[in-house]
Amino acid sequence: MSDVRLISAQEFEKHFGCKPTYLSYAPGRVNLIGEHTDYNDGFVLPCAIKFGTAMTAKKNGTDKMRLLAVDIDHDTDEFVCSATFEPHESKTWSNYLRAMTSLIMQKGHKVEGLDIAITGDIPLGSGLSSSASLEVTFGNLVSQVFGLDIPLQEIALTGQACEALNGCKCGIMDQTIVACGKADNALLIDCRSLKLEQISVPSNLDILIVNSNVKHALVGGEYNERREQCENAAKILGVKALRDATMDMLDAKKGQMDEVTYRRARHVITEDDRVLEAVKAFEQGDLAKLATLMYASHCSMRDDFEITIPEIDGLVEIIREAIGENAAVRMTGGGFGGSVVAVVDPSKVEQVKAAIDAKYEALAGRKATIIETHAFNGAVFTNL
Image (cartoon, rainbow, N blue to C red; front, top):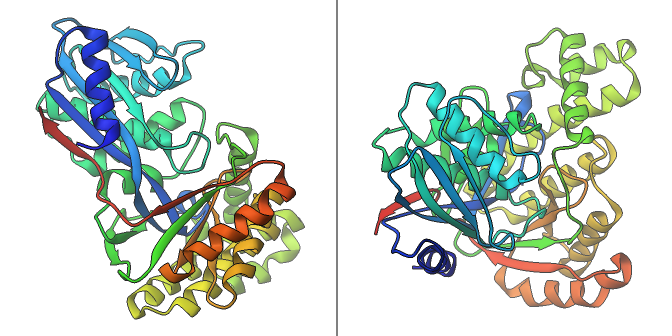
């Protein structure tokens, strides 16, 4: 049992006075390439990471969920299981579980009360999908405990609907990889058909996540604004979503849209192409090709989609300078803070760390946190 699983069990016993009988766990994720393409019906290539969320639980014989959030100063909440979503005015962490419960019950499933202790080690605001991990961990817990047999992909879709109820119209990527990830593989997700394809990550490559420690929050105007700009561009182009557009189509209609809308669409159209090329690069073990694609993705996010910040741009350039050729690095996540991801030869890891330690604090006024990981499995449930 890993640390967060063990801590959850220990804290459950301390708080509720008995041992838990169930354990649910789901990881966070890092997106290797394919940013803001998911809600445009496009392609993404994430993998699950070594950090995640654990919930230990026991039936409590009531109609109430009784919750302990270990990492939020042992905050507590309880709510009646209902198909009606009633958000708490201040406990935003609890609102994800309230929404998940309501959405599951709206489908006719019977859900009863559980005592639950929650803990995790995904850095909050790092762009590594702590909220998706929370949603999937809880959804799978409820499904398994009450014999609902909800497929993991459906739990992922419920998590996406939960985000919308909580103010963020996100795509389906985060919840899908958190639910359906497989060790040593990235997951190519077709966000229209929801077809999943496991893509082997060569064992001679490490994945580095560098958290800028500038927290981002997706429940804000910028994310939803980008989504509206993409939908507007698709309307002008006469397509269902930007997934269906080409650069030729975009350039032909350039005169009918403002410059910002044009650049937003250009990012999405070219990013979809980069994802499919990156799959080939992984399959061929071609790190030089992957480096070209990932840096092009970063520049597109910086210049066309305008979702990077100086600290993130600085980190990318520090890593590129440290590695030289074959620096496969880009911002990852929704933007406006969070983390960068790099796919690197293990022999280069120490020099990347040294470069970040030497240069980032002077640039950003804070230290970065470096996470070494590889691709892990998605959601798991255990009877204790």
